[in-house]
Image 1 (cartoon, each protein chain N blue to C red):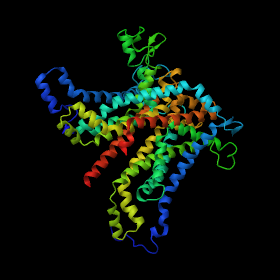
Image 2 (image 1 turned 30 degrees about the horizontal axis):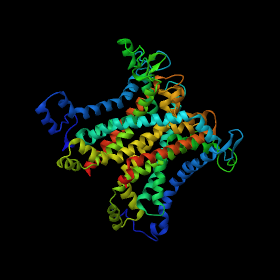
Image 3 (image 1 turned 90 degrees about the horizontal axis):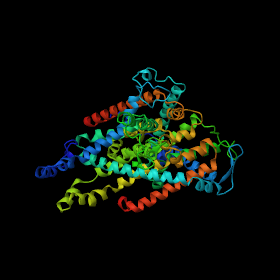
Image 4 (image 1 turned 45 degrees about the vertical axis):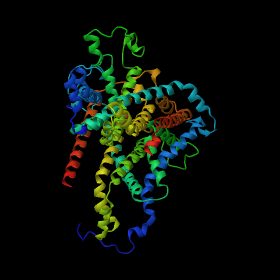
Length: 298
Length: 310
């Protein structure tokens, strides 16, 4: 079977035979084209990450960290040493944590309702859930901004809470909005393979619906909820396009990077980027290992 | 589970008390959020696109089409750029992504998860920082061009190889050209293409391909008539996931392109955030959304994906 063959020596038996018969470079190359191509594509994907990490050790000659000058640990020794950077990172983390919490809770509830119950309009609702994921971010950002502006202008002004000028609250609202759909879809995927008989067994043993949920259903779908939360967190902390429309003068980390890169490109950007990258890799690695172990135990 | 925790229901049960309301109660918060902050903003944006006024005086709905006329007459160039560069990026991600997804699905073996991990690794860094990394990489004095220029004395001459796209001030550059912009777009959305392609290819029963070969199809024919049709839903999903955000992108155009390669996203951003021109900004967003819907419908028709996915 082809998929049992490992990547580097992925020569199919027939190709091997062909090579023995006629030899030549082409026959050597043919079975290796795909692995070589894939390796090159992976290199292409890794290059900017490598550049980010390497240039976090640069000591730029001027204000812009574009050209390699000399090795230095300055950036890593003073990762927040730039006006506004610390606040921006703190704002990003606050928004990410809060929006992840809110979106995960209400998204999980929606996911449960959509898989567990049949009710009128369920099909249409599944479509509505997909809409925010299919809308270009720029359109969502622009439309949110028009709503926030409208709350401060007649005829709406006075009758609804004012959300303009924009700031922390509007960023949070926007992040929860675009995260909900991703949470619903992820949780639904986990619930799709759920064995309802486990719940029936719990009920047969005298558990009521609430304790069945918390003691049987919730622990079983918890990995799905965690996956959804991780996704929401990473989407939130990286979001630039929507945030740029609804942030006003408040800076998240990506907004700060965007606004400063015209006047300076401090090495600290690469340092914080590298820290986020390494943190995410460790987190995902740990989660994968844990779920792998849990699967083996079960 | 111990018997102590499984309390016997006393009085009306949970289901009896809330009964049919449960799904609606579960849905209410999320649905409200999406209605208030997704649906209503879309309505509001449409309202502004047919209004006149300014941020100071407020906007009044006049149902004038002026904003749409301005949007189409003044920014045709940027719409074309979006379509062209977004389309090119989609084609390139497909050309790169298909062989990669194919390799992971059929030849991945024990490296499968590692390669998938590497494919999504770019998501662990900020989109903006990745694009800035390209700016470092492709700069005139960057790691790519500086050695060529200083080490080998190459490419200082005016090389007409790539047409005028790569020539700035009479010398060869990559940064601030459409080449850099499309490379950045392709890079940024490549994982969105590979993952759905991989999911579609992974699902293919290898015995179908073997059966085709048993029936005297050569490898090319088996690929064209079995693998490719079965992978089409993945091609469709991947293309949408690439094309939609690439069309609306304005970071790559701003960081890697030049003023003449600006895309529609740049204009929307500029109108709404810098000029407070809400009518035109809203009209542009609406046209973008409509254009994407039309493009998706045409594409679905071309690919015949409705029949495939059912």
